[in-house]
Image 1: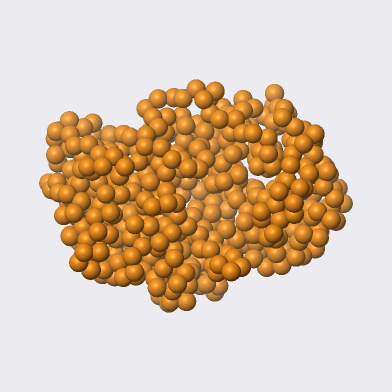
Image 2 (image 1 turned 90 degrees about the vertical axis):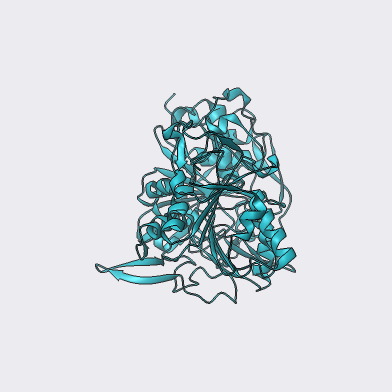
Length: 524
């Protein structure tokens, strides 16, 4: 039976040198009160120290809450994650070479927990081939002090695969909504279910401990069995939070019932995007959808596609998914990314990546930070003049883009450019300071070569133009009204792309307040 303890007591249970696993996205699943207690104990006593932290998605609110709480030199010395951008203090230690760090594909991390729980040696997959995770490139290592090899290239039945190694998990540090007196954990106020069960089982079968923070305590035998997501039989300690700020549902809200499936929100309550270049890009990306599609939308501009489809009245004609497990409804943008308004179903994090890795969705629309002449994309590591490296990691980007037959990347053409959308055209008010179309990207998060070999359909949507990967070459296929091909596009790139012989103008209607471009696509 689980023991109920305080967060301060939980912090004292974590031994020096322990490997600690967490689960969730943003603040969903994050045990904030326990993390604060660990940091406080370290400041007072120097313990626990030399921890290895393992996480899937970004954990935190991009300010002070989340994994960044543990960003104290000596507290954590090794960190493996899919996304490290939101944990500023931890990120600073990595950039200063004071912490070893691997960034691995999100779907690999969340499914490796199941391999560890079953005491299998690791995960064999093609996910990551040709990207910076491939040991022939960087092996996922994000700085100079990271030397351990977590990924191996292997030959299996005459084909190349990557082998991600299992490890011993000492502590699972998780969060749910309610625990009964036996330690059974429910998630009724959470949005995603996340991978908490798999992490708990991995710790339990490694001989470790399972600590779960909750908001409420219930009498034993009063929870519905199907509501229990982590059985009390594998929970060692429960911390009932004393501060509601430790129990936020997402980065942006303490509790939104429509994210938890506890009510359905009228679509009229979903904000309509203002007419900007962001809306133009989201509209153009939405034109690649087809009725009946199963879709994944990434963070940023891609997540705005959900609003475009909802505004046009076709939200029932496609099924949008979130990488952490949501089906249907409208995926939320930042700061609530990962949750969905009015989802039809929520499955666990690892199961959703099983669907993605097997090519089970029709189209993915994801971000574009850097691109190069081979069609490679970088969203994981950049050099900023005067500031050094900006480390983000791939999140679910590698899994999703490598296994989906049609992928649309959407992002601004240049960094920090000032543009205006007016009278059916795009006007450049001030040219950007940072080029995003480079001779070679700084890190390969998506491999154009791998995509070409696997005959994926790849498009790159910007506010100025649209590229397509044709025969392994970046090719301009559309130009925005008001934009000069030579001056505003070609002169702003570090390489010369191919120009389609059938070059078209982007639909001018996308650059106006009213647009009916999805009507034909959706069969109205």
